[in-house]
Image (cartoon, rainbow, N blue to C red; front, top):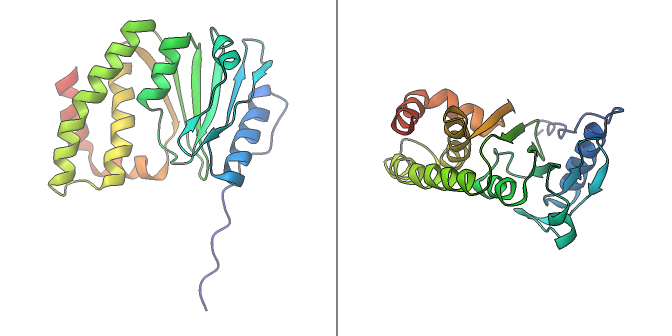
Length: 198
């Protein structure tokens, strides 16, 4: 007999806080359709919008974008990986106060809060994200790291370096399994790459 399949991960049941409620809603809907979902909250925790998305992006209306300045964005990543350059660009372009991403199928959570804003944040993110592509790609081609580890380390390292440079505050609250394993296995590579950028 085959072993029983593990029980799928479920988000914690919502508490009384608005963030608990939107986290539960976002992740539950993501598990149902495999897509990204989002919630936009103001500083008092009022829900401004609940945009839906596709497998790897949120579809924001012009009204959603207009409501972002000073707001907090919460969304899910089916990959479970950290915040991407696209996520950071959204912060830079629309003045978000912070953005948090949750894993859809596992307990993962990452948050960024901008320190620099606008073009300075976008440029720093672009420079680091682009700069990491070659050395990580080379490590992948040499068989040092897997494709999944390459993607996980690219997102995580970009944010770590931006944090160390004082561009944003990065809080990797709960690492997804792929990122956690990659960080554990490739400490030397990570240290080497971080030294190159700092």
